[in-house]
Length: 384
Image 1 (spheres, rainbow, N blue to C red):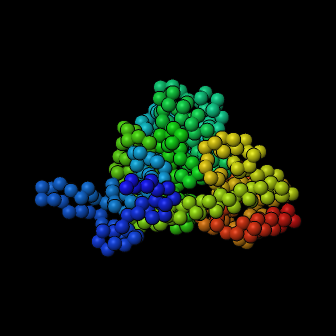
Image 2: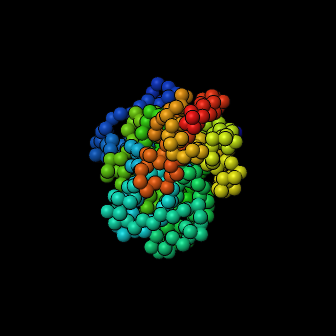
Image 3: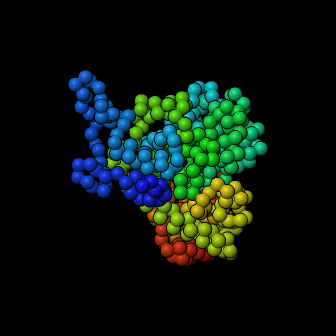
């Protein structure tokens, strides 16, 4: 009898179906050992040597994510999203040229403008949703990496991954995609031509706001991916076993959470588009969004859990509205089961491309009507 191919949601729900061989437990144990016994000939037949480069619990979580992203070369887990992202850039050489999304996670943008340039990388920022601009920015034979975030935080612009991959590869560069706000439920960049996909796994992959983690997945086990693996090994950036266990626990419910969160985000986007105190809603699921057609082509089963609104009355009204939510939580981060709100421009500070009248909303799993009622009352207080 031929074994039936299972849907990723089934494999994720059972953490690849692994059963502990000793106890037959359906939840694998947490392996916390830092060192392992050598064989009599000083070899390591177990495959484990030391805890800094490797861990069984971390491997198990990596296998789930690699399956979800269809990553043929596997996945690597890091102690944070920033550790994962910066490992890609640290695998480059001083003098290499990089083209990166102008709108992206602010902490990474700041690192590129400071530490990466001190390292010797040459960074150009461009609107990667504009393929003409992207192609003009890429230097054949000189550019080594194109970094695109899609949907991009906090404006939710959409980059055509397949188009960006074609441009990058024609120039001899790699394409890395930050897919944190899509997740593998909605987008699998490697299947669209990207070479590496990055996740701030702290966000929706974990989904419970109790783990700081990052992840990289690769399409090919080539020389560049080997350098990324060396960066994690030598710098000790691996995710700890308890955090890996929590992340794996979170990924078991990823599909049901994402389906609920994305459906609620769409409902909120539609309702807020008609709100008299909202000047504009930024959400790729709306037909009027400039990237909607591309998003509809490369995102499956929804458009993600993140949206932003621009408030009539400007910055003062936006800040006041954020101060008067009751169900939403005023907090940084995103992707958890609880809904969050943030006045992003005041967080990012000078030089941010974020409009000052913008509020970023991370949609959780609460009742969507309760969420709408909360933001509605907060907006009315903000304009009082």
